[in-house]
Length: 306
Ligand code: URA
Image (cartoon, rainbow, N blue to C red; front, side, top):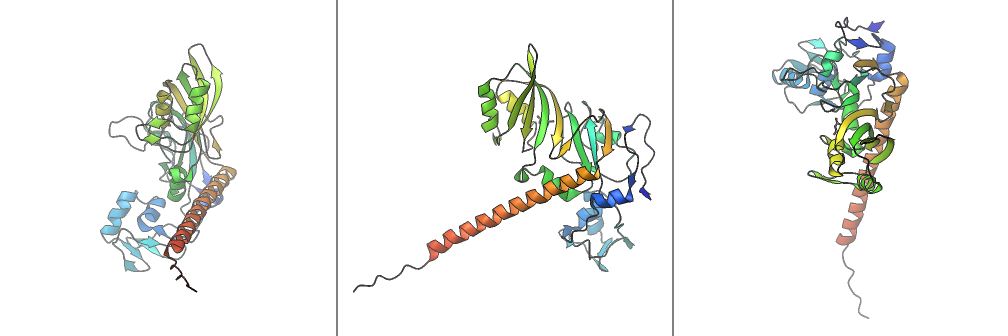
């Protein structure tokens, strides 16, 4: 049994046409018992976008355990709560899917473009499950893009708090000095603040230009281009080659493939570890703050005058 994919549009290239249900389940119908926002759960099943899911809720078309719910902040436990839209159960078997695309230059990394330019949606047209891109690449940037319907995983991969590494192969004007690299590795001042330390490796050199591998753990707009411009080396070409445990490898430009079980598991493991690390850091900070407050609030002992 498989999750059916529509016939691909003419000209669309993809390396895997169907996703077995087993793989789909392994990829993430992981019902881990945590509360999720109702509109996100509806969107994750592919029934509607998040915005449309909100409209469904507000207009009274959604019930949770038999009761109409119209509040947008409502959370549900997908393992226990019965959610219906227009009287029909949400398809609980809709798997999470994860695909990797090699975005070409001059394609928008969004699912639609008001300006009518080509988008990544055009490249994955054969996929019937609604997915969205995890993060952005500039119009003229290339390389690895992850697309999924797993909102929570996407959020963790994107939020700078979790510091997931993204590596870019970058062609720049000129050759970086050791001082330039030192600056990039310690933080450069941009108009939206100093960047977190990056890793920079020289990987090639021509007469006028050079190639670098740059790894960052944030995701500000045009960040790599702005960082390199700040040290005097405008970017000529930029290609994302790694994201967390994922590597672009030999995936053809314009093609996509589903992640393997091993890749999906590695991604999940990374996300779990990052969430755990951030949570324990927060707990530790709260404990320290509590201890400091406790010291400040402890009543002074009266002096005993003997
Ligand atoms: N940094 C950039 O400057 N552009 C991209 O597309 C990605 C990272």
